[in-house]
Length: 54
Image 1 (tube, one colour):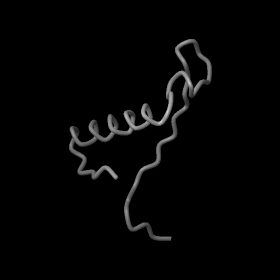
Image 2: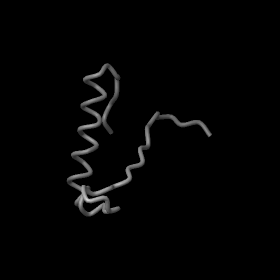
Image 3: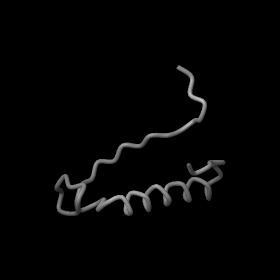
C-alpha cells in the first residue's frame, strides 16, 4: 500500500514523576496533546526538517 502523504506516528508511555503509568497526569486532555504535537513540529522545523503540520 502506497501512502500519498508521508507521516510519522509516535508512541508515548506516560510515566508520572513518581513512577506511575498515568496519562492523566502527563497528558491531561486534547489541548495538552495539541501542545505536545505543536512543540514536536516546532522542534523539527527549527532543526532543519521541512515539514507541514496537518
